[in-house]
Image (cartoon, rainbow, N blue to C red; front, side):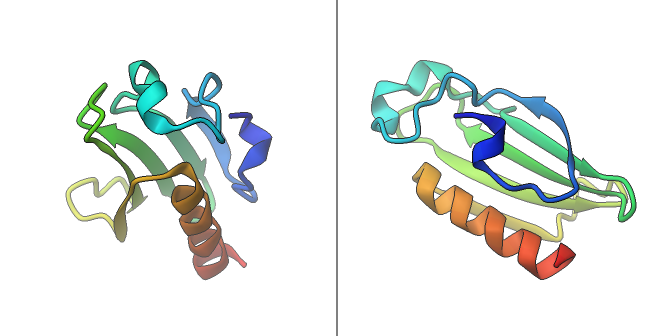
Length: 102
């Protein structure tokens, strides 16, 4: 999946490990690519991060997790949500962007 396929608005992509993920291919066929640390996007003005994982790593029964972190308080995310599909993940990212930045 290309970085440009998700609109992170003014966020700075710090980490991107989804390049080899094919958006329209079943997740179970791509499990070797799914690990805990997949994406991190930083919003400097708000001191916020969007952090995306696959948990547990390399496990077909895993799921995507999106965290929204403010002021480096990783123990108390503002938002935390899990997803089974890339489609759900992308929709929720759009919701987060709209809620916090637009």
